[in-house]
Image 1 (cartoon, rainbow, N blue to C red):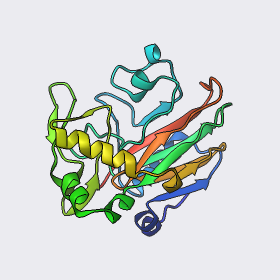
Image 2 (image 1 turned 135 degrees about the vertical axis):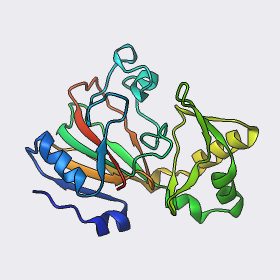
Image 3 (image 1 turned 120 degrees about the vertical axis):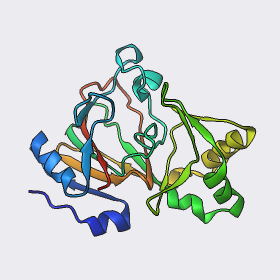
Image 4 (image 1 turned 30 degrees about the horizontal axis):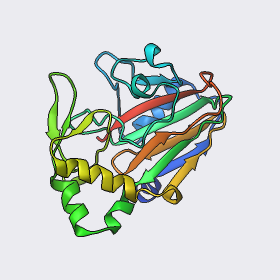
Length: 221
């Protein structure tokens, strides 16, 4: 059994290791070490199978529906939840013929900047579009005395010019040198703190729908 260091996960914000030939039941057991595995949509299985898809083949509310085979912007998974899941587990069954990476960004970098930015993150309202369950929220929030970052431009819309300006400022502050590039190999396991790290899908130089990652979304206990 793969054992996960909660201390390392809290301090570093992510853990990456290689553990070939894990089965789905083992991934769920690993997830239960750190929280509660949940489905990302009503009626969905706990484990999602992620492969690059054409827009017309993707779920109507997914990033693939908006971006197709292109790269995905940096985002928080399950940003459309009232409280996003705490951790994301990704497991590589096939890294794909296009060598497409995943990028991680530590949002703590943003808090090294001006006080006005910090105020905006905690106070400027955005609307999360989730059908009849849409709601207003800020980018930086608190849940049970723990702070978390929420950002997904595909489901979060600015409600004011201040919100639009805030998104532009964030884009300008995220430097390529601050991104951690995850290069996938068969059997790679990545667990990241979804309250702290944004992640995005990189580009591929060819159609790579053979790429297959398994994902487990994990709520905090």
